Image (cartoon, rainbow, N blue to C red; front, side):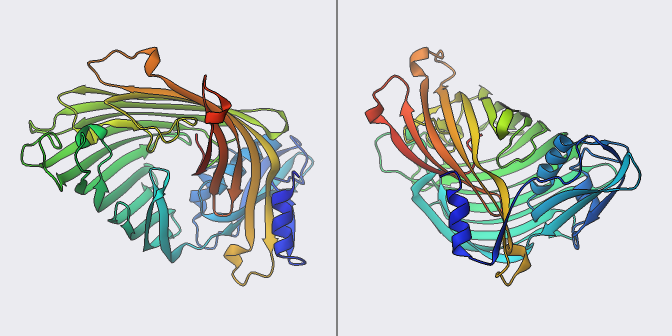
Length: 442
């Protein structure tokens, strides 16, 4: 039973597939110090892109724990289909660390197909073109469009090290979207409406260490509604146009960002919405704290606490916060709660049923698709949270909570899919719900 996923993949490609559990280290634990680091297979990717994710350097003690952590950090760049570590002894206590990578496809057109707000009834579809590693510098540039639910066009550019010596990063995004109103308050019994949004954001930041960075962003937003009833924008014209300034700090020691097994994530940001104008004039403070603690046997206990607090002038309905869209409480997965402020917490236990491993598909004609990384985890979880307005106290009877069990599937190219059963806390099990979702919950 524990190898169901493995057997399915093996049967799909008999005699052509080779399965290897990862990470597998042929070198002894804590026997060597590193003399040199040799990186192999990075035909396009610059060496520094890989090195900046590594804690192991010259003269570091080569341990299995440190190697496993660095291996996951490199794989988390989403530039490689496969990453392996090996050691070549040069003396009794010194070895060369050999990092071997298999590069993914970087430049390609792609179909756009997804769901909005984690709701499978809100399907969007389209196409785009992307380069995930321009110049081998982990620079990403892409353009895409989509029809269906919340149609959009978007241009995006991210350069994580525009200045290598000073470790400066830069990103820019421009977009236009017709976004369906989420606010129950704005709808207020009338037919729903669309928000036509045109905007862009530029970000400049500095990476101070392997784990910490600071950033500042300037954002422009022009929003008008298809039905300009009173209260749907702050301006009586039915159109709000303003700039926002965001500052942030991130501390991130997670080993594998799409599904961490260990590490800490802490994000703090302050936003000023509306600069040098009176119609839009409010602030937000956002905090997101996550911790991942490894247990024996490859299991992990994980926790998250987050909040978004508002201040200043009137908050527009499109600036409200919600449970029931991007943020969800499992057990109340489809219930929409709206307010000006939000707080929530999540705890999860992850237990490996099929540990991370590679399936080598020798029959594939393209090398970039021959190594498939996959795994399967069982999970137990508990969620709780509340939203409220600034002029109302946060009361215990407004807190929603739930718990449940699930299976988390890790697929090729860093994809995660979840199949879960969620139950509202304090209610009969018959009120439970089946949850199908993409990506890790925390």
